[in-house]
Image 1 (cartoon, helix red, strand yellow):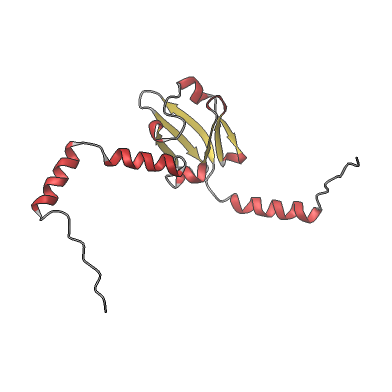
Image 2: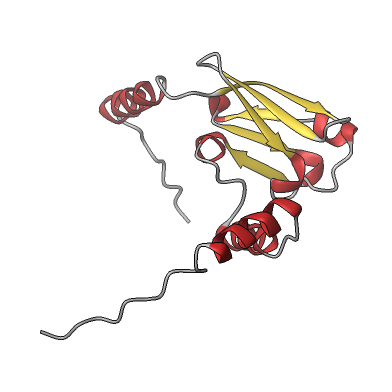
Length: 143
């Protein structure tokens, strides 16, 4: 059986380098720190900002130990954070947008928050009730 060699042209290499330059302006992860006492992950970004993420809200990190969190690797020139021992990879642009997991994970987080019973939620519900409760839906009017 004959071997087929794949040849990358100079033009393809130049195009790839130009595409990579477009992403240089986007914030990338430079550092990652786990604060065990507060259960936070702090990601230092290339634009001098920091992301502070509650561990329990990041898919795959909820039960991670401090040692597992310290064993991270920056991948893709800082566009990703990998935790090999946990088999978890995080995409930094998604974290910046507030997406801490896949859609199903995020839906479960939202559902959990909606079921929360807190004093603030009870006070807000009481105040809403004092104003007549939830606004009635307006039925569509046919023309």
